[in-house]
Image (tube, rainbow, N blue to C red; front, side, top):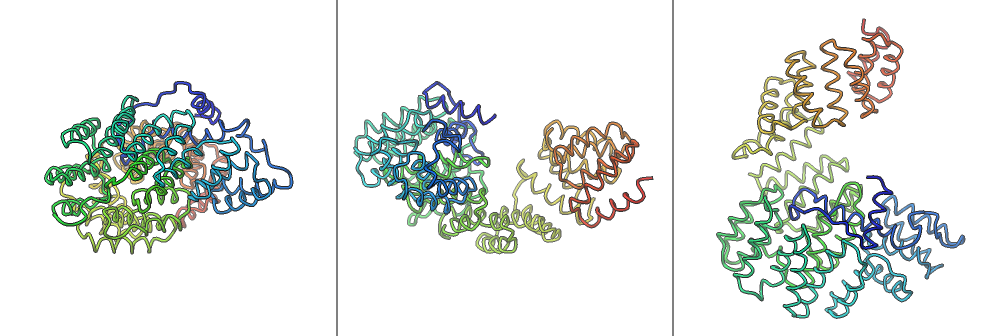
Length: 590
């Protein structure tokens, strides 16, 4: 979707036109919910398309010339995700132009994304006095009111929030929990259940109603809400399972709580530890997941939105909502982990590491935080530190297969094939039975075995992975390419690779594999256009470029072949490939 089209849709949200999101099938699953993400993604663009005329134009309404330097510096820093510099520059600019509308809004958003909620609220209140409010301003003032238990003021501010589709989702949650703060149970129920009428948001409505009324209504009523919530999804998401199990535990139904924990499929939790907590009469149980106040409930709602909104391509609005969730509920570990994930995606590794390290060892979310910490250290080019994190975690949980899988992945990325194979062996031995999702284990071990020269064992693993996931294009591509390189099973290799290409037609590596199997079977004229497409898809890959050079040579396009080989040399290939290309530049393929 082009930017202009998205902006137009966002303007329609502001104008109140009926753009209805699709059904959200799961609640806070490990996969992101595209429909809710789409709606909330537009919230961010609303900041630029709906709060002022021409605000998408960076040249529009620029503050006075004498102050333009600080403003533009802030804009550049903001666009580079350098929020410390952005907020500092905007603050300097505001000292000279404290009432500049555009500057005030830009500064407000930067403060929100930086997590400087007190300063953001101050700016929002200034804008309210000037009657120049924009998206999020009445929301943050209302949240401040709820923290102060000024429920009537909060409701008044929430009522003034802009009429957008995302606010049609958020407002019933905010109002419902605010009325819970006022102890008005009827209006609490009415507002929270009103969200059920919106297509795709029944689960959110049912869960929040149950959480808000669990200590006030009869168990039968709450059970009915939770049963309906669970029944609305094909696979129960982890957070929903934890919330319902916590309620079962609190109401003395420990066996039912344990049964629900067994249905969690996420590898981020130590399920045995969770079940032990439930069995103990004394102890924390699952209290970390408890919603103990209206403020906690509002925080949960903001976290729900941030989780659904998060996306690799644009996480600005998700960052705002997760900061708001943390503002409402300090030591909200799930929100801290989500914040760390977003910071990691932005390349802010040190800040992400700080968030993950704050999760205490006794928390049920400790394993999740440590796995994310290891991943961040790995991306931060600190593989040895990442390994140490996993080794310490392994000492605490010696029978956890996921930890060994992560260790294997790091060793494999470091080309420590023996270390990777050993770790994957441990992971596979700890897996009770082969599930479909275990294809990654056999595939990863197969890669390590193939790279270390143990092809027979590698081939067995690839075939096992393919049996578990017969439509997985990466397995088909790797196995087919390996056969092609060895000149064996070429007919079967081509079949696998063609199927992989049909599943991922824009994958340059898989397209290259198809071209290469055609080359290896002497169909050079067919190979050329396929390899040309692979190079267009992956223009900076030395191996793919080298393959195209070979194909050009075979069809008598010698100058083009030489050109592609020279390009490949400039891409810094490994020593073995570089030597082969240099030889071809001298002698060709004859």
